[in-house]
Amino acid sequence: MHTSLAVRDRNTLGTLQDFLKSLLEKGIVEALLVPMRTPAGGISPALVMDPKLLSEADPFAPVLPVNGATLAGQLSVREPRVKVGVILRSCELRALVELSKVQQANLSSLVTISVDCAGTYSVPNYQRAISSNQKHASNSWQKLFRLATDTPGQPDPSLRSACKICEQPVYEDADIIIELHGTDFEQEIGLTTTDELSAKLGMAPTQGNDRAIVMDKLVKARSALRDSEFAAIRSRLEGAEGINGVFVSCIRCHNCMTVCPICYCKTCVFKSAVFDHEPMQYVNWAKQKGALRMPADTMLFHLTRLNHMVLSCVGCGMCTEACPTELPVGIVFRAIGQRIQSVFEYAPGRNPEEKLPLITFKADEWTEVGE
Image 1 (cartoon, rainbow, N blue to C red):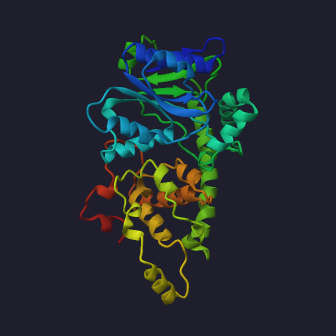
Image 2: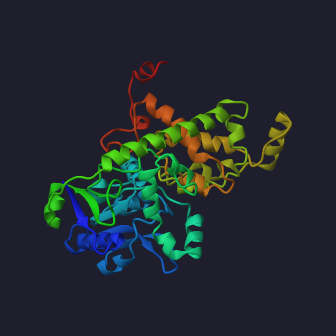
Image 3: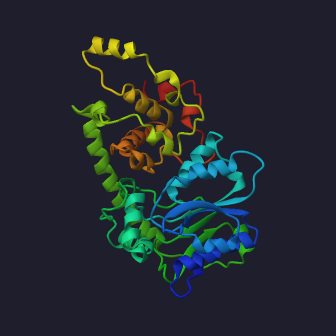
């Protein structure tokens, strides 16, 4: 059912905070995983059980310190469980769906709450904005949503690279959808919920908004930017530079793996002693080839990650943000992922019941994909 929250005194965030408090007070959930403002003005996810503390909640803050799918998985993967409301962006919810397919999250114990997204800044950029002008930083989400409506093909150049080409800025299959695109968010917040939740919350249906029109324009503009970026990286990967050249600066720090919500393995061969070779092994390889790039095994690391999770890559871009040498890890995974996902007609996060091709056996699979 579509409904809305009337914004009081043009305080959109305060109105949402009151709504979140009602979810706890009415027993819809026992706890909320939500971005919270720290005393210094930064943003950090927190598990909140005291409604009074939600006066510091800020799901609108345009920053993504961690992909919350990982945290939601930790809160739901094992019993005993409580009913937790998880307030996440589209890329986080799609990653959460993928984790549920490999038994790393339990959706039945979660109330999923999606927040429309207009993009996020890197944590350092957001922190700098807070330091220079805290009031401006707290209202920057409003600027981003207005840009998405007025000039969808010209995103804020300071946004994270993954956000500029994100063609799925909203998630439509959550239990509660907080709608900002296409609304006058200083007057009302659009909400879509199940009929059961609407009844528990005592909310009545209201007319729709212009969200579909705004989203159509934004998705087309973002898709055009995405295709341009994909063409550029494929030119590098398939040209003289090749994948070795693209990843030449990799120092095998494993940051991209650590922050990736889809890399869930508890025991990873790349964190073991398997790749701690004897000194003479390096010397022998160098002798055979004439020279050996150090650190070794960097390409094996990236190719293994691609093989394991590229079907489930949701394009959140956390890997790019975490790379100390600024490798385009995220765009490489997205560009390769687009082609592989199309072969299997699979879209990550589309449907919790849709099985992962990687763990699904089909006797005639190679015939189907043209082998």
